Length: 87
Image (cartoon, rainbow, N blue to C red; front, side, top):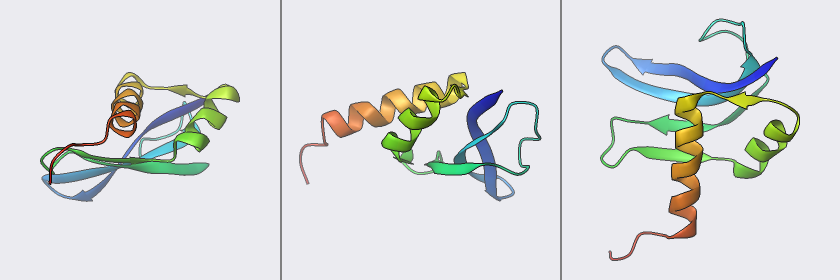
């Protein structure tokens, strides 16, 4: 079964993540099928870049996002729907 999950990158104590499609049973930082975007929680506000068309493609093929990735997908969709005002 396929999963859309986070893969940790970055230095010690300074995490950043790739959002990837991979086999559900594979290691957290092991080989993956496709890189769908990035998530950087150390920025204020947290930085999310996501290829939403590819996310929808993989979900339609049966890949299941983890709870955290599902939350990030919703958050990224909300940011696209209502761009930040000001500046």
